[in-house]
Image (cartoon, rainbow, N blue to C red; front, side, top):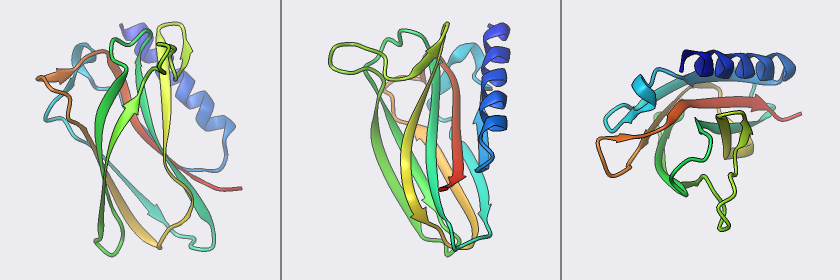
Length: 154
């Protein structure tokens, strides 16, 4: 399992190095036995300095190949620099109606990117994004990583 984690890190570092427009990129891979515990929220914090540009914000969900669920219930809370909270509940689609994986997979590792905000101007200041799941059970199984990417629109 450590080999898969190292492979996942390698893939993300490769992606980061190829895309110079990334302002922020972080992924948590600290899931004991690939289980995302019910109470384990993931927090991401980034700063916007340039308000003349637009940004894309993407949620990253990495899982094992042939995930057993068609979708996963995810909660996202974004706090902007003024303190205003924006909450979203999404049913993250893992497979289409025919059962085909929607993620980009390499071997047993699949990375799914969900567009939270696209081509959006953001206020100057600090942002906080908190991500959790509402899967019914003590944990969500077969999770390899949960992340957030913020990039400038070119």
